[in-house]
Image (cartoon, rainbow, N blue to C red; front, top):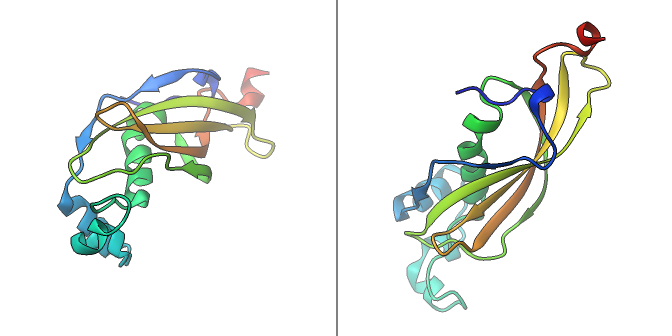
Length: 155
């Protein structure tokens, strides 16, 4: 299923993504390893027991990557020119091993590209919820999306 084109993006549209995932200890350890993140809060159970959380907290960058990855099929699959950047990231609640995560995206803004008549800029907000419907992450993603019809052709 393709993503949306710039022309189709409607500000305020909410997209609930179907893919969910129960995150595992292996996911957390592997992500920390490949990103060279030795934070004991993520990796050391005995250390984490002494914190306010009482257990290991999932690497928050995994949660951001998960949010973006899950959203691709419904937002930018086949229509992305390039990601232009990421805005504010928030982590209002921690993610723990064995939490089940789901993602909902909203189109927050869109604007014409000044230099690319064949594309436009869309701002998404991806929100991640756990199995208790608690918001655990929100991330702004700014993407340059293809148009179905170039602005010059439409005029």
